[in-house]
Image (cartoon, rainbow, N blue to C red; front, side):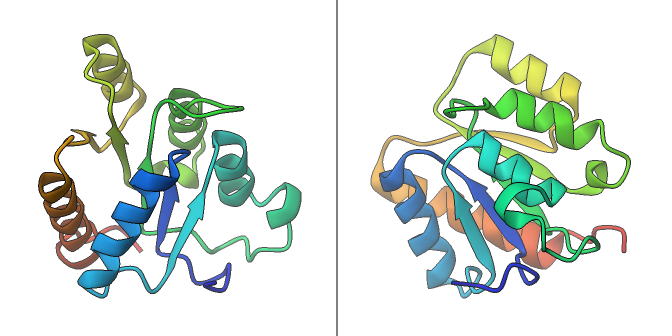
Amino acid sequence: MVGLNEVEILLVEDNPNDAELALRSLKKHNLANKILWVKDGAEALDFLFHTGVYADRASNDIPKVVLLDLKLPKVDGLEVLRRVKSDEKMKVIPVVVLTSSQEEQDRVESYKLGVNSYIVKPVEFEKFVSAIEKLGLYWMLLNKPPK
């Protein structure tokens, strides 16, 4: 497991199959060395805000990108997005919604809350893998966030 002060990608996904595909895709392009997978919105918030089991994390350590599913147990993805984008320190973190939801309401609400990108998970294996690869390459190698 990656050290908690070295996380570059936070993957928030409750479906183990989708998470495994995403992790494999990112690893294939050497983009998963510093990735943390959490399985629900509550754990994502604990990680990002240094609470619960993540209370000892360095307070200046933030991921380069959050890949966020919307349909999550405990705390849904829209609430995670709302909390991240309403916090002065956290709102600079790019958040990419990666979801199976094609509902217009979810897309509109995500953008209103400040999401950086909204991607519907492709159903086909190869298309899903390709989408994750492109996503990882863009956010980890091409995007230039503020320091």
